Image 1 (cartoon, rainbow, N blue to C red):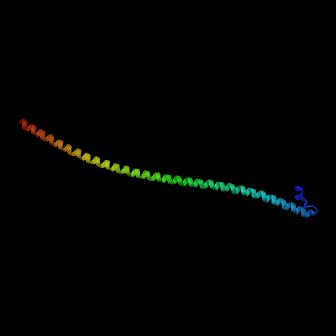
Image 2 (image 1 turned 135 degrees about the vertical axis):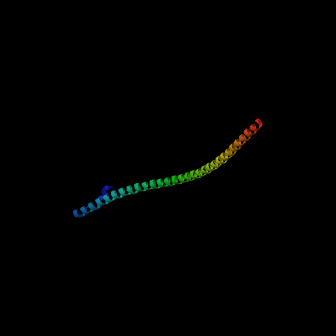
Image 3 (image 1 turned 30 degrees about the horizontal axis):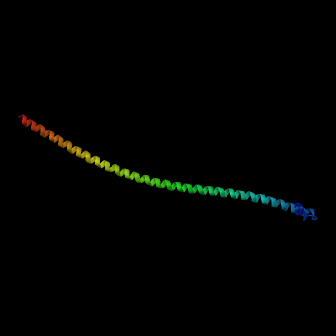
Length: 120
């Protein structure tokens, strides 16, 4: 079949044949360049998709971390409230202990005074 492709060139002047050869070479170069560019385009598109997926994964991770952070902040708030309640309860109990200690001392003094009166 290539002989039929080349048949149309018969009888052409060497100058025209040279020009045809140059044009055919240029077409081949352009085809190769087009293939290279197509490959580059496909590679860049694949890289872009990979980057888009990476960005999407980062967004998802950021959202997860944000939810986790919010949960931890709520937990900290609850712990702080519990700490304040326990601290308040401790102060109340210390106050009660001090009152009872004072009452105990007062009762001891009363007992000692009564014992002294009994001895007399």
